[in-house]
Length: 363
Image 1 (tube, one colour):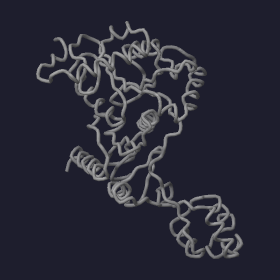
Image 2: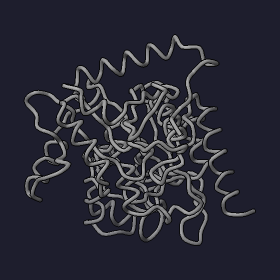
Image 3: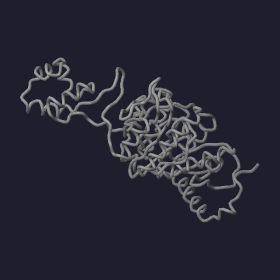
Image 4: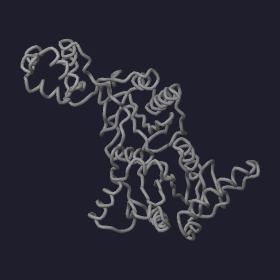
């Protein structure tokens, strides 16, 4: 089987497992950042499927984390190999801090509600110890650190580290549970929240810079993305906050200060703010495909989506994605007017008859 066919089969299995687990799945994204989004209740995932997880670069991982941060989603990699070996069932691997699992582990976690305990790191497979439970069990049996160390065949220092939550090998952990007659191995939560936003990686084109600067001018905070189907996530700016990213100007020190402000944005602010998946494009046939993809993602995430188009357009919307010409954007006065136009066009398109919808763009 060719590599492309193998990856398509991997994607098919991953999507099927999540659908079986009750997730709603987006369209395929055709991007380097992630392959699709999925949502079940309050859990949103952005998923990337690769044959070999070592193929996920640092810059792609940072891009995934950045998108996950603003979409309040969990990044997840699904693969089959790491290096020359197969990913083992029930083992969580990590690629630049993003959990990576095979399809069997994915099925066990989301369908069977079975959380893995083992993770892979340099040197082999390990588990994490519940230090507080270990100390309580040891004291209940009246064992000193030295006595327990002798029974395990490790140093007293190692036992002290275990009680502070250090990891150890599966063999040592199982022996420890046997001696203390207690459940000590911690489960791994694959849903890892991205606590802070990685810096933007993408160099902006002159068109992107012009449009995003205009969005800033009318009152939006702009968070650019790299390798994603949309160019940025936009949020109406709070009056007391400055822009989170300076699109055109700013020294490195000023940029770092602004990045710290982004990292200080609390979860409540991110949940309550109206976020808009923002795309930028010229009038090409690819715009239609991108707008449909972003529309699908917006439905999964519960966000609005818009494309600012450089050129003449006749249609106001593609699926759930509203279209605005660049010249129109430059005449908008503030974020409220922008949001009103989005709502007005979305409502108008819902009433339009599909069979008489106008052509997409002028030749």
